[in-house]
Picture (cartoon, chains in turn green, orange):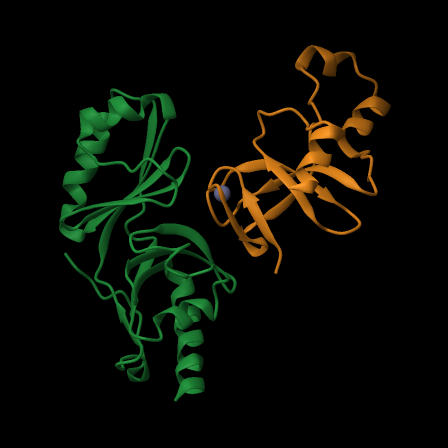
Length: 182
Length: 103
Ligand SMILES: [Zn+2]
């Protein structure tokens, strides 16, 4: 069942040049598998684990991002949560691995529009040129003092996830930014 | 802002994503050695560092990134990173550092 995520986004943040919207509740799993087992794990699970850190694989609603040498995050719509959990706990019987349900840890924002890059860069020091941060790349990074996950789904579209308690802090920065550019 | 090359992500990333983690290549004594060690030697292992002026081999943590520890050669005078390398690799020789500087 979906519930109120408890985050209000001011109207000023839903414009043409910059639109920031709350993503619906999601299923999220942090999965760690030893490098030597990854090939067998992929075969047994059917999960399309990307090979390079920063790469993602999207199948339907499911997005798998690789954040560390042996660390992936599977995210999907909220109703897939139980199905994925079941599958992972079954796999845990066959592999030395860890799988943690972190579905409710994060809040996800969709940041889009001509000024989306700037809205990310006011708090995040990464180079967001398409050359170093192409569409489809995902990484953990930082936004001011908040650790975030950044995913670029389009040239002018980003999904940003942070821990729930940091969400109002993020919204405050964007509200200030929207006042500055108004 | 300083850019640090993470050998795991294999790209340059802003220093804000990293945390310093002290001098590199300090081997922790094994259990048997610890049992034999004097308090003075133990405190030396724990707390005494070379505090080098110049090229320093040190540990860094890509805390807000891939979450891995790695080693770096950084000049403590100029704050310039000459090279970074994985923890499993040996400390680069003076010659290797010199070559890396000319790259
Ligand atoms: Zn890294």
